[in-house]
Length: 438
Image (tube, rainbow, N blue to C red; front, side):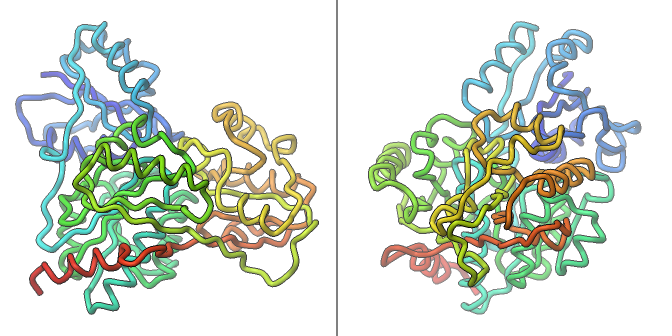
């Protein structure tokens, strides 16, 4: 059987590794790439593809889907990426079916690995719901209970795939050694600041084996709205009342919500009560068995200076405001509450970032912290320099000032998980801890 895998540099590689790499009955002819720039045109290297693929596997642009199906007489196309509308998945399926091939979605039973230690997974119905701060909160809770914790991140392999097969980050210096992108740093830096060791990479069977040697609990910090690569013993899923209705509209977010043991309604401190009630109702309808708790994502500015009336540029977490679909994020909320005058950066954006505003027309008067490449980093630096403001407010989880050395002062907007109810998430996790063997 000749197979093509539709991907975006993460789930696609994992599905290949655990389902197809050693199967003599299939030939994976190619991967395609979407969402992340710079992946198409490369190859999945032979060191990872295995002896059945001595030349590796080519990665093409998803725009070539129909042509690849016909040219290579593809029998089956496997969809393997996340945070896309349901209709997007079916439009791709229609292209595939029109070419005569099957269209397949691989599920948890075939793709989830089993760890030798308990796994708590944090997932969400969309990108930008607050998974990482929830994971950090849980890591503090678990360590206070005496557990050795390993944080495992959803893959972000944007560089040398063979070199990134198995990654362990214990210090900021490790990020420099690995030449991490902004997007990787946004996920890893806050964990390192919280004294968490982070595991990531491409080959998750090897990554799990390494992580479970030094931890008695693994915390899965999910990416986008994908379901975990590991079989969770406790599965926590976030819904977002700032995007009510999205619980039912995106893949695989709806499936993830239906899988949850615990549903956390995040951002209740900044959402309208009617929208909080709306997402709760949707969660109960899709997953009546799940426990539902409310939580907040309070934003704190790292400054004692008054910002009222100051002209500011707001830099937001990139994935949240690009394919995550939000017009703005925590930085905009913090700037507005502080009474700052928010300057629209779009007229001052460099050509690369102008293209991002065209690609994501929902974006508001904020600058997405894109940095998948050196060129995008330079574009971000140029745009910050060109925007006539007094201060930059950065809601990127990384230290943008240290990375970019901008010519303007940077005030960081930090956001963490906060309980709103008793019993809340901590109580549910504590009950889980009691149930597992020590």
